[in-house]
Length: 116
Image (cartoon, rainbow, N blue to C red; front, side):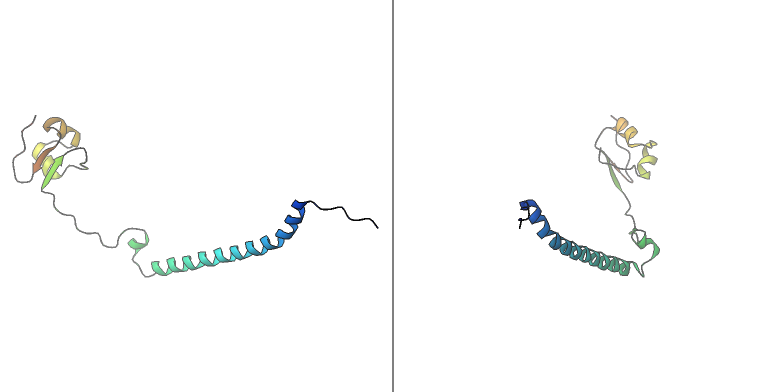
């Protein structure tokens, strides 16, 4: 009787691992699905009962803004306060820096600084 042809090492390893990989991948898929389902449930429970603003990602109650009484015209400045606009009649930070210089300080209730 003839012997069957010897299988290569790669074929033997592939046949022995196929069953293990199938079982492990199914277990991993179930674990991921359970984790995602639990996370979605937690997120849904958190969002139930909140106001409409909170569900859209905004804070429910905004804190009141503080009144600005001192402003420095430098490159970090974001907006020009209304008291500076009233004082200088200039509306942009760029125009104020051009006229008064970088780093000049404006204080509410005091006269405007000297232009450069």
